[in-house]
Image (cartoon, rainbow, N blue to C red; front, side, top):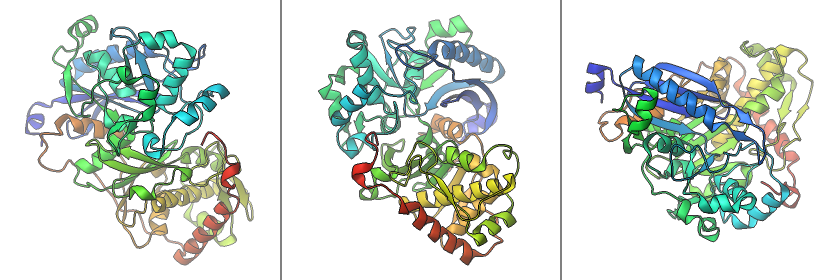
Length: 484
């Protein structure tokens, strides 16, 4: 790809909306970062609920886009973001929203939780369990309709987060498969049809037409471009879900059936080869989509928060000591799930996290135990996805070199590689810009983990014992939380 790009240095702007931060980057069409601007994703208090500051984001986005247009030859713009976000809008793209965009970590009123559950359909309608708090676009729209039915009745579209920003920029509404398959509970990607709740609640009129993530919706609205000093030649793509676009980075590099484990606040595993009948919603498993609409098995667990519980404070910049890890293994010191509010792969474990064996007494030992625990959670994710072949690791856990080494050692008969790029989602989004024109694999830098220097047999025995202990206190199904 990229003869034109190599000659004139054309760029694509990528808006990446995370739960905590928002980045706008100028990228090359083969996914390399040229410049990035960042702002916090502020949350405002209610009423009617905690919500994101779309007005403030709009001002920052349009001004930052103008800045990048002055510094780079931007030709296209594409957005990506997390899946637990829907925006109800009126017909005018200069209107920020019909109702405030719900923060997905907002607690639910019991009446909303209880009223929604029987409407949500089967696993393939939801693509997940019913998750904590205000997750799921369908549940957010249901809440809006219960609180303010008049505004919902007057609204024109309900848009996923990347498509909301594409609509603000282009004026063209769109639905997209990776966003709707990211546990929105609105779209059944196996049957390729709206979930029953859409017709049941009268929402079909709010659902826009589908467009692929790579499709050009149109040019930027000329009045918007002139008002903010943005290039009027900028074209706007549909965009997609952040984890699916990170997966697309590997697929565009020729790894069609890649199993990718991304780490951060969540450990997110995605594998297109996972059999659909192996997905267990009670073990944090989900059904996503790649950009072509192909179903992709997934698994979610809040590994970053688990890591923080175990590691404690003060060791953020220090690498784990391999000798300490071997010592912890030898004396049988365990961190067991789950310390946070999420069950992850161990049903009924939320809030029941614990330590067993001789305690990790120093900050250095806690850090070593946290890295070991993170590697064990990752191996459990890979096992749940039924992946016995190549696995690619990326994300923040790789800041500690021992993490990849331990994951590879825990699966000695399969290949593990890693990618150190810190902008994988933005890279995948940028590659959409030449999706239809690409005739050779996109570049990607993959490395092999260093060999584990400790006793592999002891590590394997420790991992087996960890799994036995982790499963020992799983609650019977009838005793599990009702919002899972």
